[in-house]
Amino acid sequence: MELRITRRALVGLGLAAALAAASTAVLRTDSGTASSHREAPMIAGDPRNDNTDVYAFVSPDKASTVTLMANWIPFQEPQGGPNFYTFDTKSRYNIKIDNNGDAKPDITYQWTFRDDDKRGTSTFLYNNGPVTSLDDPNLLYRQHYTLKRITHGGTRTLVSNGVVAPSNVGPASMPDYGRLRAQSIRGLPGGGKAFAGQSDEAFFLDLRVFDLLYGGDLSEVGQDTTRGYNVSTLAVQVPASDLAVKGDVRRNPVIGVWSTTDKHNGHRFVQVSRLGNPLVNEVVAPAGLKDAFNALPPDKDAGVPALVKRVTDPEVARLLEGIYGIKAPATPRDDLVEIFLTGIAKANGPIKADLNSQSLNRDAAKLRPSEMLRLNMAIPPSKDPNRLGVLAGDLQGFPNGRRLGDDVVDISLQAVAGAALTGKLVPGLTDKVDRNDKPFLPSFPYIPLPSNTAATQG
Image 1 (cartoon, helix red, strand yellow):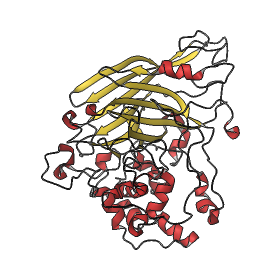
Image 2 (tube, rainbow, N blue to C red):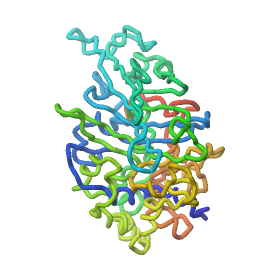
Image 3 (cartoon, rainbow, N blue to C red):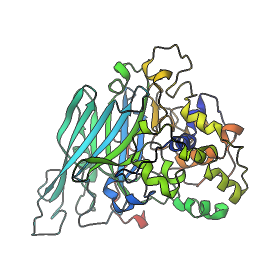
């Protein structure tokens, strides 16, 4: 398959960006744990604070807006009652935006939660009858949230008493779960929407990659490991002008997006989870560095060489050569470093080709290398989205942000194998999981409704 790869399109090389990002992580443990799907040692014991995925895309049905979404609490077994799945009331959940390239948050959407538990000592049930609305007295446990928008100019409360869409107990308890989801979506001042609640796990992939890269002979592929599991989703849809420097999307279209969880440790809030690009911690950082990476803010990424070799001589490329005979590109992998750190892409990235431009978030002098998911808000939704994103010429695809349907595993494997250098895909290098098992929804929050049958049944 020939690839329509240009200098502009190089930003689409998913793992390239991820690899380069992690290479500059400062090794500081602080009190941090980790993020993503159980990829670091400490987070396995704290799933409510485990951030699994971040998505950022121009809304397909409302192109003047951007949807920002982050998921937490991985591998939720739908039948995991009686307490099911809740956000941590001692934590702050954040989606952060850098719109001027300095790797510091200019805008933060922050959720905090409180419990409303009416069970007392009289019952173990989550609900004691069919739940037909969010205020149904049969729903004995619910969570409320406050959503704030934090900028350099101050803090504004957008939602003061939102209701989290409950866990999907099952058809007898919640005969019309879609109605509960719809009732949980809140309008925001000045336009936009917010959502908090359970969703289908939409990150499709075969996790047997960890069994010597799909069994050592690509025999362990084609099984969607996350099929049937749920996650807990936080999302906002806001006008793109709310995110751009001075509200000017035309001149300042690029934003960086990442999410964090801040947990109160009895004295102060500390960052215990961080996630931008997918797959960074899983396949880049060695085991001894995973927790440290996830305690860092992006502006601390630059300047520490401890992980640079993980980029310039990536482990995954050497594994592909040793196991499958796919010749690793020559090292040092300056292409991977350049793709992420120097912003070579003309249409997406913090540096514009014309450095005399007055575009504030493209000012090379202000750029600070950092790992985050970057989105060019000026690129409209694709009429015919391609799961391989920019690798297939779809400039709205990963990692120009990340859409729910982007096949980030295949994109990443091809990138680290050198697809950008050769201009061709490596035949057969795929996990053969090309789409989610459930269709995405046509309107916000787009992510499918959560399953209510056992994950092993789909």
